[in-house]
Amino acid sequence: MPSGRTHDRITLWSLPWVVAVSFSLTRNGELTLITAGAFLFSGLMFGPDLDIISIQFKRWGWLRFIWIPYQKGLRHRSVLSHGLIIGTLLRVVYLLVLLLGVAMFVVAIAQLIWGFPWNWQKFAQDAIALLIVYHQEAIALFLGLEIGAMSHSLCDWTGSAYKRYQKKGWQAVLPKPKRKSSRRRRK
Image 1 (spheres, rainbow, N blue to C red):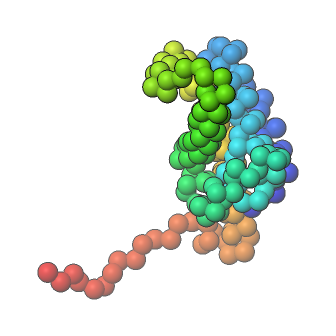
Image 2 (image 1 turned 90 degrees about the vertical axis):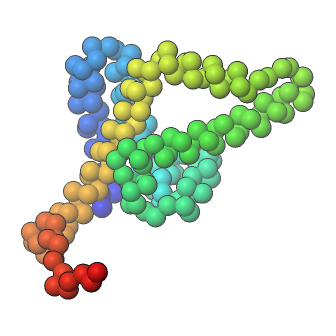
């Protein structure tokens, strides 16, 4: 498994390619910037290694405590942390649930102090309306996060495969064929 510094180098060296591909596909500087920013954030702070005490975990500084339940709930390199799409989706949902919990607490305290009206249903409707209006930006954001996580996971998988190859040759890298059972099924 590559070190955190190796993952950082891969992220930084891949950034120009992400920008070039993103801009060539979208022809939009704002979407390219969102994708590139999300890629950098994902590669440096929001990647699959948040499931262990890693350099990504440490970069959260005094906020790193928010990732401890995530670490306790997931096994390192599981499909839920390192899996394509599902890993990123789970981290996004986890962070959004935490932010929503903090927001609910802050709004409740602010309502008690200042007494302003707040309607959570209206807030949810407005948030959904914003997602509909800015759907391209939301997709660019998620794709940037996913590409950053994918580069990390693919690097881990190829690094592990290379180490297995060095130890045992091609037998360790290629998938093992399934053996047919010699037992007959009883009806």
